[in-house]
Length: 127
Figure (cartoon, rainbow, N blue to C red):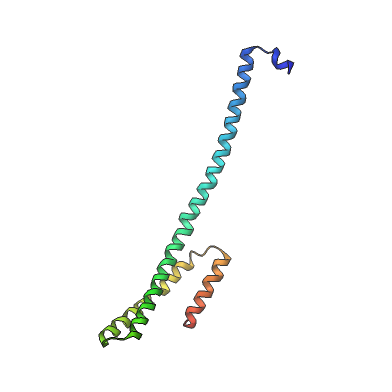
């Protein structure tokens, strides 16, 4: 350390400042890398997860409409009410394939694909 003490004060300050600037540049590069990783996750949420979740919510709503229509048909009522519920059920059966097709394009993982194919098979079997 005698070498450092032999240097003039101005040189020592310059070396200290240069070391500080290098440290700050390294921290900036590290932070930029972390921000890029967070941005990639946000992009994945916006481009993959959110549309998938919205489409699944629409599928769930369509299926709930079907369940309510079936229940109302079973509960009965006058012929017009049963006919209205039958029309609502038919309409939802026409909407559901489009929703399933839209979601099919959003499936991102093998596990998700397997679950979706299982659900499709159950729908095709009439469950």
